[in-house]
Image 1: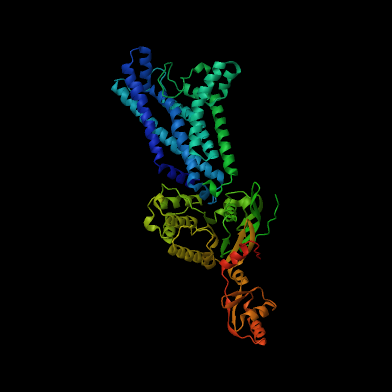
Image 2: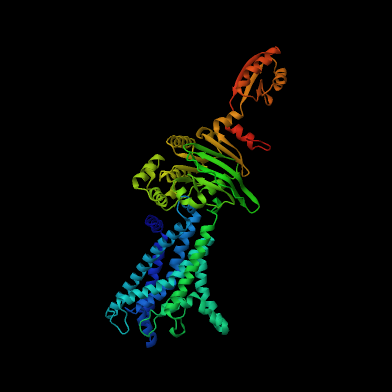
Length: 291
Length: 314
């Protein structure tokens, strides 16, 4: 399996796509920290909004702000595109047929692809987060504020690790959705459009259902986004808000499920998407016309 | 689904299909195909376009599932031991595929890893074998079709397989490349590698293969050693002092098939053992021979005969 993972990572890291996506993520981090945070703070006249802007760029409050935005766009843009592409291009290039003649069980081929892509995604998303934190430290210094975790309700280092884990868990079901769609549809476009469509569409549908009220409103309890919001809310430092470029309302903790229940629901969705992908791939005929 | 029982494993048989069947909806792509490929032989798999050759190869390689029948590779039932069997085989699929953003070495690294891992020295060896050493660090997207075919062969050989399965491997090769390829296949066969090669190039197959199977519309028409199949179409060319009478006389002889005119000579469908009898029968009727010689059949003639409408094979 080590060999398989090594070559899977080789295949992805020698493509230009992850680097372009990393650049997009870094630009997103720069926009959040410098434009929405730092510039917004200096231009804001109302103290409440200025406080929000300050917590967006200043360390350590910037960490949940970066993770919130990063979870949404990281999942939607980076993970969905990269995952769909690594799966579907094997069909486009015809290499999936060639690969399966080498004596590797199908599940192992798919598992290596999933794990390899996950490693690349993790490395690149952490790199983008690292650059975002660096921007935050520079902006905090420029503002003359101290660089310390020792603030009111500030996180410890293990808690920061936990915050990153929660955000990562919020990315996984969308990544797996992209993976399953790309496997089933053999299409990068379907993986990306399906995942983006779900992420953006879910919010719209939930809003409509809430306006209807009653049982319809309760349906949001089964959505992925509702449970991801619980994880993101748990990352907050103190009671103050921050600005985010995630395309969703800032979560209100009181309405959200318990973090552990949220994690469990997310893992169930992830397992379901994985099961669909593996089941279809294991049983599918790969004809020469399916290149 | 018809349940076909698997015969006991014969160590000399590397690949065997038993009543192999594949149906797509109402269309029968392959019907009850029984093939047997023996160790160290170069086996040609022939058939007109759409006969089911690629379907058969896809079934053997586990890319598609059979509607009925079984496959035995190295004595292993591929329904339960496909990965173990495929580890000992190498394949070149029709229209070989590679990672275009990787160079030849990295592509071979990938394929080698999927086959259980190979070292850099072996990669160098196969690159040299197919003549791609000087282009090994070029990205594959810049390769010509012929170079891609050679790289495909390298990828099939990189883990030193016992069985090589090739689907139309000479597509895209120039005449020199084809000859080189033919030599390489013969060399591999001579070194004990069993080769299963599908092709529509009959001349290539005749020169390259020991055994051949011919399929048409998903059904096996015939299989056997190339030499004996070619001999089955054996004929004699006879030129006499009176061809018209000779035609009538020879036609009546035992062991003689059709007798046709071909320019100045008669083409007599008969084995060369009948030559003396034909000569004597004509001489008794005061018809004398100008010439009598065996007319060697070719695989192409045999193929056209058995695959034409109403053609009957063995």
